[in-house]
Length: 124
Image (tube, rainbow, N blue to C red; front, side, top):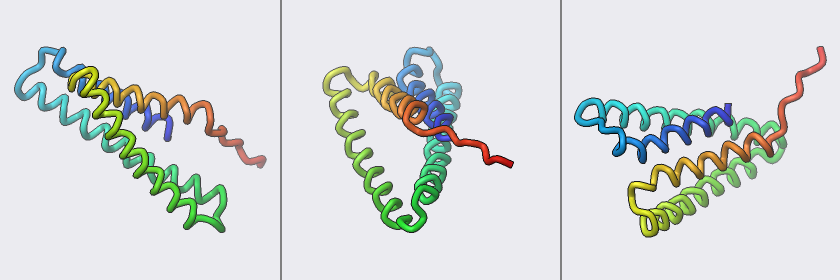
């Protein structure tokens, strides 16, 4: 689920940079933009509770601390994302912002696929 949400985020974010190149105008442009925004937001909000439940499952006795650290990490990520966005706009222009964000979401996808252990089915 988390990997899928990162993939959807990467695709939605890349649409922001691809839209100006698409030739779409008017209602078509707004429709694709709305779809990208809704898909990206849904992916973000779908992954948050999954990650939080995984953290609580790791150490239920320390759930409050784990969730607080998770929240702090989210805020650090938001700050770093703003920094990356500013650097992208300064160096490559606003048109590259969606690609930069998509690249960052792709890094998250690769991290999930390589670092998160796969669930082992219960013997039964």
